[in-house]
Length: 539
Image 1 (cartoon, one colour):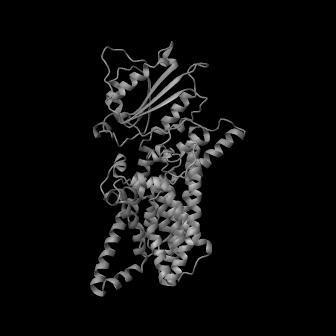
Image 2 (cartoon, rainbow, N blue to C red):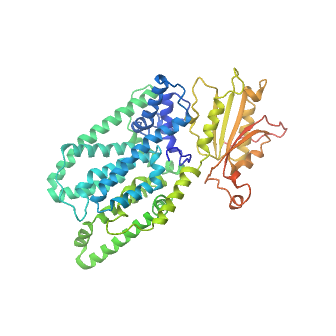
């Protein structure tokens, strides 16, 4: 799935590879606002370690390798994904290690993990949520020997001196990657501290908690130093940069969150959990309801303290805490996307694969994950990445040798195009990439008219010196017909599904269904000039 064409969300490109391609390879890119010195809301450490390291190796190969010219937009796409795919195998090892500790069936848990489309698609993409999920999994690996409960559990012994340092460094790294990591780390750290206090006393707990500080401080210093160096080099002024503070300052403002979309507080619980995990989320809800009923029954029989104490001595109760605590805390924010719940996959598969029960809903799980992989791995915005590859070939193949051609690539009603996949250098032809977003039809027509009237397009042999392309889904193809621009050629890339402008059911049942499920790349001729004035853009 590392080479799949589906485009899940712009953040998979604009949180890492788009920025690193510009910094390391010097290619044309669109830097997101989070990575400007004036904002600096994202740490650069993990982009440097993932996309940055991959692009550095490609650059080294380009300069010293025996086959120059090997680097292309496709290599820039697949390189970081292959690295994340390799890192995702850490999830398999973690499940193999954690399953016996939590009383889960090792084979069933590994089947649930490897068969999930979240693992196959989401964990192979360069999201910061992917890194958050990997760090959360390793946090569980570190604390589980001390907190996990199973029929064969033995009393834990204090770990080596480096264990607490590594645990502190892991929490700090997760916090700098995404401050929401604290929501995931809260339950494991609470269970770890509770067990250490019960087994060794409060004095030993305080001592071990203090042992977390060296690792956390060392990691924080590393992140702050790297971020300060990076953003200071961009602004050419030295200053201390605390990216988590800027992140929280921005996201705690409801007006800022509203710009990215506002959702109901129960979206994670009612919608996103089922969208990512299907019936496994339903099983978790059922198990939580059963535990609550047992809790109330135990309260009526033996009292609250004894009832809760008895319920907590079970792996199911702990795993429910690990799953629902982050979900509830993340639900406090009004902006809720399904990918925010990616790290919960590991505790969920441990919860849903007990040793004493067979794996239910096998056929439903297979069908659900196959459909999820097809939708997000292939169909969703699936023509945009192949479209960029097609346009890369066009702009790097001059129409007339020895003639400079100006290209304008206008994207409308698609996700933001990651420009680094065009592999444009400063020495290449002039290419202007315009993202119109979901602009109205008249704005599209006015923009096309303005581009065609530029001086570079009015010279002799204008169509050869200035080429204008419009990239739009089939469901928005009609908007271009209103603009009085004759078509020079048109290329369809199938499949392409845009959920923002989904095709009507009637169009899918017609003979032109393939047209509506394709991305259209249209090269335009000069427009037919009319006396009708174009409307002005409204402020």
